[in-house]
Amino acid sequence: MSPALRIGLPLGALVVILIAWETAVRATGTAGLVPSPVNVARAGVALIADGTATRALAGSLQRVLIGFCVAAVIGVPIGLAIGTAPTLDRIFRPVLDAMRSVAPIAWIPMAILWLGVRGDAALFVVAYAAVFPFILNASDAARRVDGSLLAAARSLGAGRALTFGAVITPSALPFLFTGARIAMGFAWGSIIAAELAIGIKVTGQSRAVAGLGQLMVETLYVRRDVDALVFYMLMIGAVSFLIDFGMRRAQIRLMPWTLR
Image (cartoon, rainbow, N blue to C red; front, side, top):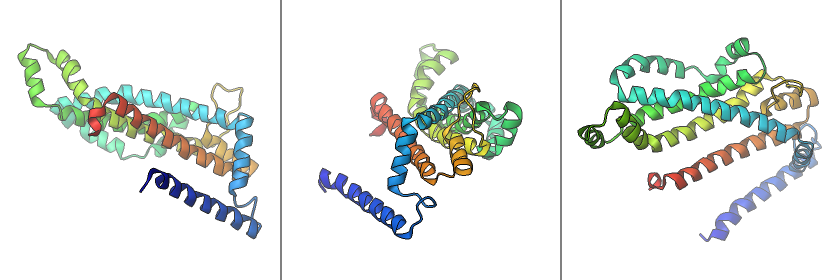
């Protein structure tokens, strides 16, 4: 199949679906209750033009990035430690597995109790969701380090700290990057879920900024604007795709040997 057909066929199918969707909404007279492509596009243009959508997106992305970095700082050292020390693995693995089995969304009541209903509660949920992919991939990466490399380092007189920094960590980078991609996916999904569950519109006077999930709750229960609601859903999906695409491109650039 030619490149033109590979691009043209999906686009053509999408156009047909959108036309059929718009026609069905107009024919049934359900505009206002059922979103239509034209109205969703109009709502999106208005929300972007007045800055509502971009401010909310910036608020959500800020919490995701902070929670992601916190999870990396905590998860990577723990994962490498339990991956290189069998005793630590036996002690902490059951605890980590038990904590991992608790869905991040289940922590929202406690997060609100401890941190309030502003941005910090959602940030906690994000960090909790993202930390376990870092731990699991880092520990697996440490166990997969080539034993001959470790033996060579020790034969050259490298101590534990130097071996850890010069052999184990570089060898673990491909697995850590995979863990980062998974963690970012969990982080983005968790911030939307947390903001939806918290469901409070944070005003401009607060130090926090309302995220996409909070605006979706406001859009549904206050404004009852289904077209804007669908636009937010499309924005969430597009951002998720772009984040994963960007991380995959970064992996190709930085570690092309991992994709053979």
